[in-house]
Image 1 (cartoon, rainbow, N blue to C red):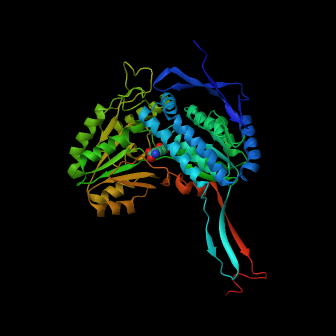
Image 2 (image 1 turned 180 degrees about the vertical axis):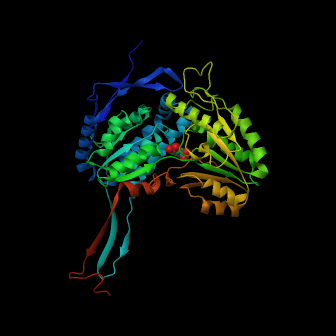
Image 3 (image 1 turned 30 degrees about the vertical axis):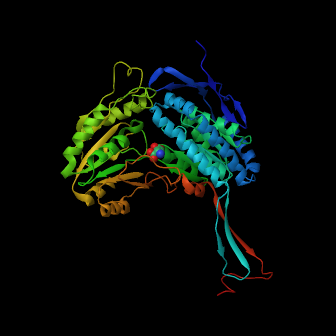
Length: 497
Ligand code: UN1
């Protein structure tokens, strides 16, 4: 047997081994006997080298004209597009999501890269009149420095691109620490950026664990920007650590997203949306529709159709085109899901289908869990309140729009919500009232597009948004510029009072 491929870190324009001398295995979650590759088990010393390289590269990268930075991103976007199929296949092998969804993940990276490349010829600030004569005012975007980017395993290429592309476009340099479970997709992204002609040190990749790489990276005094997507628990630590030195910090954390199904909804459409939102990516999206609040008048009918569809979902290896739902990312995540099913059973939620791991042919070597539905849930139950991050959906009966909104908002998170109704008035009212950063009408809670701001209210985030021009607001800071061409002393607020 050929020895497994060993993937290296990328530091200061070179592919290098970790100082630790160790590597870790990246296994296929659909078949843990399949080794995707070996990756560097990096440490704080590697982080120091990567940050130092990024700090040095920042000196010149910040001065590269933005349209030129954009040209490099355009080349990277084209390479991503050309290699989409290979990149998607590799992603399915390391992460488990079905190939069609892996293609979507790569497509998000393509879209984000083209979008940010275009910003090279915009990066607009504002001009505004001065309150004094012969004086001119404007705002310009300034880069900030080294960006520490920490990304999750559920969108192994999309999310690294959401952070890397706007960071680079604004003139920052990057140290990227991808999730331990999915380093290959981030490796592929960085390799493409190198090929597209990014100067040395501008992007650095350091693989490894959160404690050995993520923590020292967030703590590093020269990392001025920190962007993190992951669990609320870790996000809180990242926030505390970076607050000590007032780093710019963008956090995107948990969700407990909801679909509201009103009595006039087109039920088939609502069922389609709830299945896609609840079980797409095996429920491992922060936008997953893990709660469905259904009007009592249509509850029975909806629940029957939904359970019937959930039961029929075909689980398996995501490379098989027949398969609709892949495995969970690993055994630990499967155990979390199983624990929550036990909690739901104990607190009196009605298990309508699933509730167990899948075993037998094709399943025994992977982390497969049956699509699971709890019915007649009380809004206060833990399975309704807490993020599970797996294929578990809770159905909650409600009475009218106001109660549905109240239940919908009755969680600590606020990422995404959706309503199914034919009534434009009720749709708009829900749009106004739902405390979420994203809202859908007659569509599921997942599938955000890269040119709209992405992020959540309440404990989902810390007020920042990713994607769209909102990302530029995080990765740059405003400089207000006043140009006095009057040739004399002019005193604002005094001479013009
Ligand atoms: C995530 O789950 O962290 O809107 C991101 C969506 C995808 C991105 C999800 N475009 O579902």
